[in-house]
Image (cartoon, rainbow, N blue to C red; front, side, top):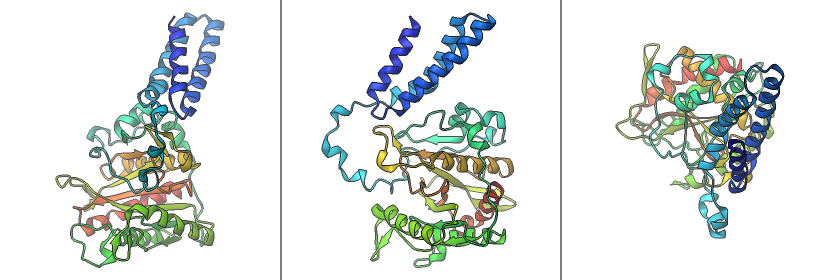
Length: 361
């Protein structure tokens, strides 16, 4: 009876979720689990067959199917007007979070490989997943992501591109009109630190969120995308693309850490998964490099935990793409916030450069 119920739940999910990829993954997982569990038990008689099969099915339901049901939507109620509203075109500007970003708990700042291989642990202690999106356990398989080889060999031709979708972002003591006091100046510092380590870097210092002296954030990702494509055409050897931002937080939140005896701004890695809870996979925002993007940020986070606990905040995952699709080793980094000083933000680049060098080279 329970077997029939579980099958009913799985196929119901396939009919209600707009993008059926999740349901297919769940059914495939169920089938694999059934075959793996049933036959060894049948041959070995080590335990009752029904006990093994039902345990595996319950596990699959909890880990894969239940999250899908939570975020399912009835798209017969979606109107044409909803699908062509402005938010579907100028959405990638939105890095705002639906709540404050959680800090990594003090007791989990030590890296433990066995823990990091468990999706449940990553969900609770390492990732913060925005309520407007969803991520399956197979996507945050720590063992797979941490085991992915992202290494490169250093070259004289440019391998790293640093740019700023929101280049006008400033800090609390930024001097008006001074580019070096904005997030672009922080990019200057990261460029210098990487070059000192023998990494060939291109730093794009253009501002994409201002036009004719006015803020133009709604199209900033489009403008930045055009620039990225030009750089990749000119320097096809670029393998790493870093978009440096400055976060905005509640004034009572202070993103400051002391590392190597210096006060630094905490940083946060930000991933987009091209999927929202209400619309499923965004087919018009495909990202063939999503898994590598997730591996890149998780490996950097792990490296930070090993050497500089407290330097990074939780990795934030949201539903859009944020121009991370151009290369697998693409990274969006939030460096401090509006209430950090320029000095604190620039100081943190020495550690970020070290983490990048350790993961990539």
